[in-house]
Image (cartoon, rainbow, N blue to C red):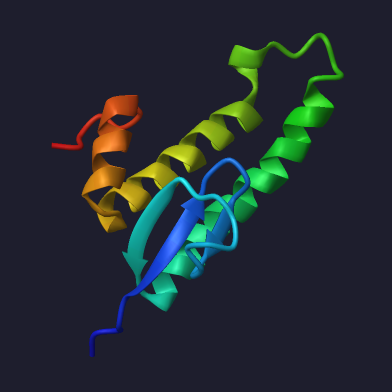
Length: 107
């Protein structure tokens, strides 16, 4: 049984997912099922938690950025966000993500 996809508008910086095109500014338009939106929301929630850990790490001078597992986790999760947006997004979303160079295999 195939779920119906609905249009959603995504603001990556704030982790917003909306079905309204006009309520707030957005970066990408996608077509997604309820399950796909739950997965995307989980990625945004993971990065929100990681951002707090990074905030605390920033106040500990002896932990270097490149040796910080929280930064690696954030980077990995944000890549997953962009991968989902690329897969579910419209042509404009795909073009923009390709221009960012964040994903290796977008062809």
